[in-house]
Length: 217
Length: 217
Image (cartoon, rainbow over all chains, first blue to last red; front, side):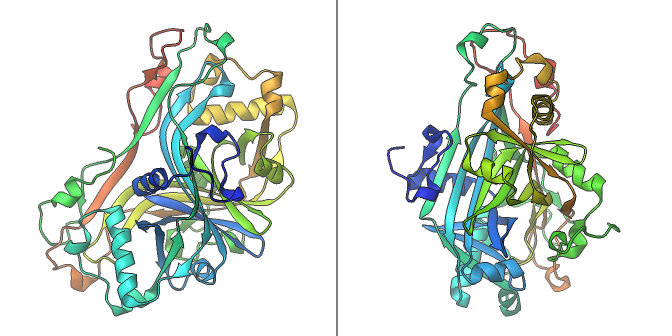
């Protein structure tokens, strides 16, 4: 946590001891998340959109419909703010005031630039796919020229980013410790259930990359 | 899904058949979520902040530090956009292009107003607490005057809102159905783990409102 924030707006101001700015911490949280919430401004109005994403080194990769107005705005260089939030537990204190969540979050500021060439788009889509389900990409039909043309791919540099992390038990005031209230943490975990085949043809056996999906185990 | 969108900006434009605008659907998604992502604009720059929330009828309730610059901006009537996203599954198609997520999401536009009186603040904080852990509020020490003064409470009317929902199997192109690729859905679920006592005093027995936490069961 000794690394300084990369800019004033990415500095964690509320509860600054929860902030971290090192690349390893930020990448680990991004790699564990499934969805980011993308914030944009259009005519003074904020918009927040949940999107899948991927990471390739210091680039965060997004994709969406090439026809989407907000994707086109991002391509045009609107400033963006992306948040990835992982909930790890409900923190149950003896006072209402000290209730909290355990979480790992990243906030990233920047501007997106289009990933333009077909080869670079395919590499980025592969990174987004591998982020969601490692091992899937080589099994499926790759995008054809029409699908690629319908898909806008964007990258945002992972430079102006901060992580914020809370772990551990509640922090009750000393005078509340004797209250007759159970206190602690209810951990939370997102886990996969049984894979549901669509019954539309193809092999019946669930492949290893689905059975061994690496999150929540 | 027959109800029309309440405004142009809350109309679901990408994949409009996934959109819904009825109060029952919107409230059910809000009630199932734990965290919303709040989008704000400050000097042209978007900010996205994860926050806990609660619901009381047609009001969405937020709380935060009274010293926070962004909370003060919301109190001053900045336009906000709030998103709640629940991930229900990874949709595994035979083509890379048709991969997707199953999800339930709500996007809400509006402006926040402060909840000012102590009585109204306490009622709102109770609603936020009951949203997170039903049954907890009556067990714990309520906020005192100092804690209340440190806490800003805001409400946003749940009026200009839309839901977007994807359920069911992948939608592959007919010509891909014969590919030798397993396709279907990997369901996702957020579940509680074993409660972890903080060991700081109070009863050892985990109370029913923690053991029976109503999400993910």
